[in-house]
Amino acid sequence: MLIFVFTFIQRGVWGLLLWPYILTVSMPLDCKEEPGSLTRCPSISQEKLLDRVIHHAELIYRVSEESCSLFEEMFIPLPLRLQSNQAGFACITKTLPIPSSKSEIEQMSDKWLLHSVLMLVQSWIEPLVYLQTTLDHYDHAPEMLVNKTKWVSEKLVSLEQGVVALIKKMLDEGTFTTTYNEQGLFQYDTLPDMLESVMRDYTLLSCFKKDAHKMETFLKLLKCRQADKYNCA
Image 1: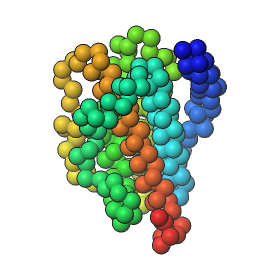
Image 2: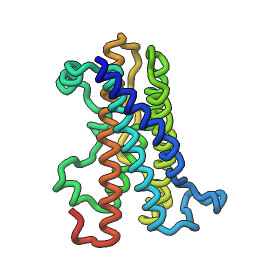
Image 3: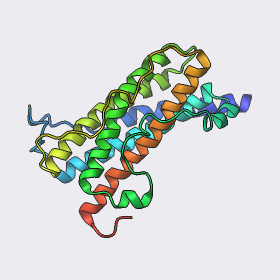
């Protein structure tokens, strides 16, 4: 028990030390130097905009990993972690038409890579807001976990804006629509008991971490193709 407490405190200290740095290095995705020009970001080159989007995706994935680990340490005993893989909690984005195998991903067009990232981003905006609300009902929820969840939620909206701008710049699409129905992806109408609520929130964090990694992977593949179209595995 003492080892667990020491480890948790040690990680918490490092997290607190690094947290201001993460906030500092996160570059804005908007185009403030061109008021009202967010839709096309004319003052930012395509390459620079893509770099900013990738940077945001990297930070979001990193913080999602930290949040998931922190939640596990605080609320999920090891036996429940093992059971969660067999409990039937499906990820909310499971029904999205997004490939998951390496071979399928490599065959995706640049357009479909970008639209897949946008679908994932938009699918998680509402669930992360929900997660912030449920964390407020936890006893002894670490402030760091609450702050990380809020930070990721805000950055996800910023990432959405950046991806939309990137789609319009790279694909020259003035208007576009996604092919899925956002309604029904995330519906939690009833209040579950405490254990079910904890496992549901743990599933949300775990699934978001996977999808955040997928967003980062798709964007980096897109970046690679800009430099060397035929050697990006």
